[in-house]
Length: 568
Image (cartoon, rainbow, N blue to C red; front, side):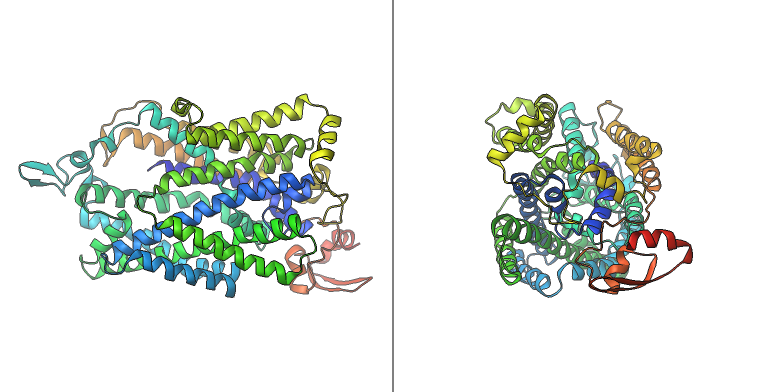
């Protein structure tokens, strides 16, 4: 379970690699769909199609996991009085309704107003509550713990008795799985709903502050969750159903305070599942309706037809998720691995496009195709399953993707790649974004000239490398003693130590990110009002756009030189 703390840190490192450049580009060039950077940077319809595929398929998996979690939670919370399957249909209809009426704004407001209060309150209270009722880690984990009881002459009620394997140091194969899990989480920030939040952030500074808070979420959410899981293993090992739902249901009988904590936690968990499912659905639908339907398949489609296509995509995706999520014995943990494994096929295209001027779609396309093929073949058993002794299919797929890309990029001539592109790929002469010119690395540098992202400073690069090294060291290859200290085995404390070191490096890297003013190539066409313009132009207090002129007022007279250059 501690791997999830490391996973959140890897997610943070992925964010610091991608978002500090993607957000200014989205504002300057006018992106409004998750994959627009790929279309703008590479000018390749085939690569854009592959990116849509590799972005949307993981969302179907993600949405299915949310539906399955909702069914288990409702079943456990109501003790079977409300069938979770029927609840899934009702909540799915509500999610579709929320998407139609409120869109991403309704999700954001729900997260801020409801989740920030209820989720934080519940997680802050769960630890003390379980500590009081069950004795915390020391009360449920070691032998002769405070929750121990004798049943038919057998000692029970402690993790050491019920599932002692949880306390032994992971095997080498299990450690390989943990490392693979962490590597694949580097691509998690590329989920469409997360890219939408990146693009729609009020400012770079607001986005950076959000990333700073992310450094602490691993321990705020994961440590109480681990305590809940261990308590369930020790005290209620034979009760079937969702661990979270079972434990929250048990709290209802422990007095008014525990009842309140349980009520807050259960309410916020169901709201969180619905909110996540809604945002995932919006992100996937955006990719399909805008990037696939309008920009790749039907260039002349009207806005009305795009909206109708979006509605149909939403209903279809939700229907697939509900049908799949209601199946018995669904392994949600394995599905998360598949989600990140497919998403990782997008990582080289985004990362190289942001930082490597020579990166070519002609080299990336065979990389994505071969990487995805290897991922499927290994997972389905067509390639010897013995390779998964060393790492998972997702990491094999990512490794092949990068290797094939580098081979084509380094060893094949640009002329050969360009000739191949003319035969098999349709390219446009102009970009649909920014000033109409295809985005190049030099343009990215110009747009970022008022900012410093972590990967452009020695401090930021060093901190990010240190963060990845420490989170890798947290993988328990060392075979340290399983003796307990404060209710947890020594090897678990070593994991936590390296994860904390990695988290500190993440904080340093985030502080190395210095947001600045975004340099526009021209006034983006989508900015048609004063409120919209002020998002990209914080130094302008008032602006009027005319057909052939611009009138503006400055918030600070010292900004006049920069503003004059910007407005010109």
